[in-house]
Length: 212
Image (cartoon, rainbow, N blue to C red; front, side):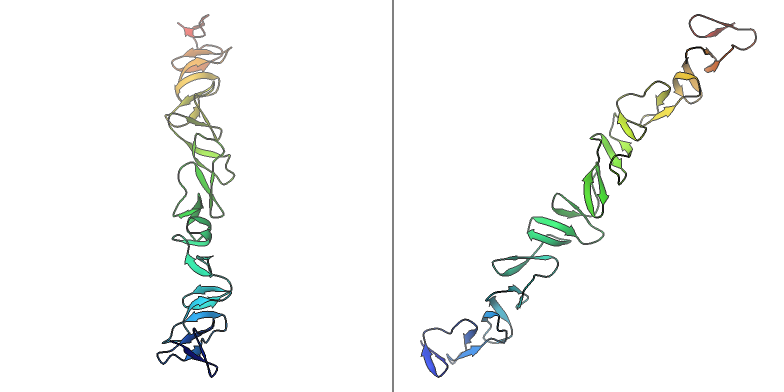
């Protein structure tokens, strides 16, 4: 049936107008509204130019939403800035951004830098500082040495299982801080310690030890 519009008859109400039960075109409250509810002219269903959000037309979707076909759709959980349902750029504090999604914490091998998870520089590093290069924990079986991850401890250090610890002074190889097994050249091993010269009643043997 025809609708009454501006004292005339039309096949359908123009954009921004809606037909009431009496087939009379009524104007939507919002000038930017293309289609509104018959029972509530202030509730928009479709917008002319802006984006539909909670039955209103808004020029910009609020934080946590993105515009698609003039409709504001929700971002992923805890995301406050996105371009699609799967492409987030900023997260609600204290959540962090990783791979375009929001998580409560950064996973291993990543560090939180201003709310974004960035990879540690060392591929073998599990935990690093915000400079990304200072490692504090390595993945097994790598060992922490001078803030880096190494496969074996250098001369003068021993492994405690997770990191390289310095042997005592003048010791090249040891099993603990107090148990040396090989001394630096010019020093001699005696009772797991290094001496130069050897203690009383011992002599400096060619194998680098003090013998009695």
